[in-house]
Amino acid sequence: MKYIVISEANTASKNIGLFILEKSLPKDTKIIKTKHGVLELETDLQKIKPKDAEIVIVASTHKSEAKIPMLNAHFTGNFGDDVSHGGSPRNLSIAPALYQRTAVLEYAKLQAADGRLKGYQVGIEATHHGPTLDLPILFVEVGSSEEQWNDMVACEAAAKVIMKLVSVEPKKAPIIVGFGGGHYCPQFTKKLFDDGFAFGHICPKYAADSLSEDVILQLVNKTLPMPEKVFVEHKGLSGEQRKNIISVLENHKIMWEKV
Image (cartoon, rainbow, N blue to C red; front, top):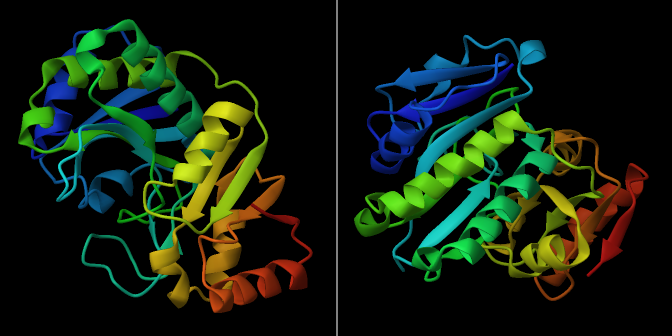
């Protein structure tokens, strides 16, 4: 089954849901409407059996202090002990890489066809916040402030992206896990668009100091499908961070490449 989560407590989610709820859904798709915030979905999602879930898509706001208009997608998880934004410490959800790639490519296609979306930045984000469950979870977002959350053109675009995800099987692509760089993954986003890669979990530089061996392996093992290799940013990590990550990868015979 494919699941679409719509939160009545989240402005963009509620607005995106208005467009989704008027559509006919495929038979293998269910909508979960909740009054919980998007970072408090454990109770709602724990009812889903992992073996029954192909993907769980959460319609959501994206929020940032810079308030840059964004149309983006990302996976969930906590690399360290900070759980102030939901989930459990040092735990990642499953990252359905091909679905994320499909989402941002569709966002870009819609943006190219509609000049009203011209001011938005389209891309992926590093893995962050909860929920952290043994489920393939993808957040599809509109950001980064009230103005964009209430932009019905952007929210309709998000709804179209979500409908694409539940209606069409994603095209195959080389699966990659990423380490390094900033939160908005500029190098990895470029490789997604220009080189055809699909990215699973990505750990940015700011979170790499706290990486344990277990969490490094989770980035790989909880990416779906299993990644072909790992990209390690050379300039996007400190020397100590690179050393720690590469040591774990090589000890477990995981292919990696410096980018």
